[in-house]
Image 1 (tube, rainbow, N blue to C red):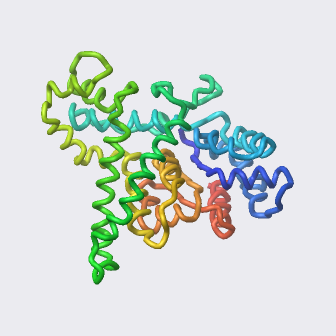
Image 2 (image 1 turned 60 degrees about the horizontal axis):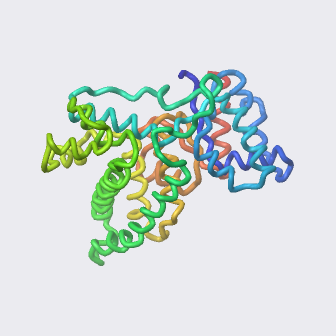
Image 3 (image 1 turned 135 degrees about the horizontal axis):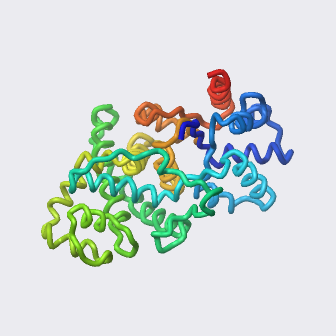
Amino acid sequence: MDKKIVYLDQNVLSFIAKVKLGQIKEERVERLFSASGGLETLVKGGRIICPESVFHRIESELGSDILKTKLLETLRQLSQGISFRDWRGLVDVQMQRAVEGFFGGRPSVLSRSEAFHDKTTGGDILFCREWPCHPLQELERLKRLYKERWEGLRKETMESASGGQRGLPELTNKLFRQQRGRERQALVKGYLLQEDRRPCLSTYIMEAYHLGGPRRNGLEVYKTRDPDLKRLVAFMDSGWLKAVPFVDVVSSLNAAILVYEEAREPEEGDFYDSLIVGTVLPYCDVLVTDNFLKGILVKRLGFHVKYHAEVFSGKGSELEGLLAYLGGLMVS
């Protein structure tokens, strides 16, 4: 896919929809969508795609019917029928390749084209069929899991630093690395090792070892090869797992919110937002997100460099930067 991938978060899409409905008047948003060098022109000219995602569908249900209709109509126009795969399907692909590299010695690179689905040719299958529940149900389960963990983790993380050294950058960075490791472990243990779906991480390990047997209860079959799970533990602390884009982004964002943003209490929606960014950032040329996450991604983590993406927030001054970037695509 040689077109630039521009992912717009729900806030920006809502602004565009409200401007088109005449509910608000915002000159920069009008320029963003319809001006020469704006999103509409670049999409029609084949320069960019603004793909849809499961998250857009979920969040659209929270607004009025009029706004929902206009927002999804705008998104269909900008996406040209291209959507991100359900984030769970993307994680499955990324994890399978990491497992193949660690257990099977068959490293491979994730192709950007595998992250997307063209609904104009294959029907509307945004939701991953390999999972037993609707993504909204899965999100609610995950948010409950993380809310329970975060209630105790924030206090534990801050208390692990002694009073006089608490603000030292080297100590804070050490706490961040420790917490990122915990978040990585939690993602794998509480999410990817579930046995109530197919496929699951243990199934991939079993296949990498060329083990036969039922696809369900894969972990039990795997134990016949690694009774003490030593290789599994080694995998969970390996560079292969750390390099999985979804695991890397989500664990880093969660840890940064807990450790670096001491003055701000973690919110239940933070984990949901980290799922969005973890899904789309590795495949984007441009990510438009909220100002809080933009600050963490750029200033705290440097992920705009690591994942080769331009990151903007929906704030007025930031929209000027986005407009300048899009204008550059017209003359490139």
